[in-house]
Length: 115
Length: 118
Image (cartoon, each protein chain N blue to C red):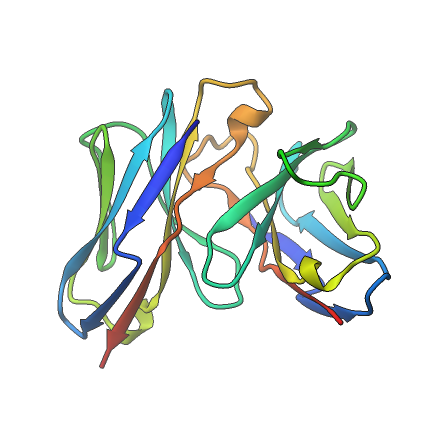
């Protein structure tokens, strides 16, 4: 069974204070690791897909990295508008075709950036 | 980019009544759509996988007679909560993966439906 654990549960930063969010995972045959941002009362917004260990992707102040056991979401010089819950999800490839398309989500990290 | 429209964004209903939630892919076809449920300060829990033209696949513990899913076309899936009770109050979200694009743009999610049963 695929499992995703995110830490910390909550993180408070001052504007400009860089930090990292962690996503540890176990999966049979990783097909993709996804990072999403979710604002209160909204659906998740896609950020990145990572496919293999060593891969990195960047978007504005965010950078996602991947190893064989975990992924990090690095936030450089965050701004208050970066406040949101960040979700990590994996898709494994070991099960039946239909259920093999499912995502397994972590519990998320609630990020608050104070001005 | 791919857009999934979910309607309504919020609904209040009386206990014992049924509520239908629609999920439409606006600019792509979706053979498969997914329905999630999210409780406050918790992550997304997959309820069922909706397949166009066939029966939905429900996750363990999800009552298929209570949460009816219909995926009648390549752009529309509906979730009907039948005989709703207060414990069904939650945030329901659908998602789809645009075909032919791999995972480069991820799964697209709807904006969610806040259901409150009184």
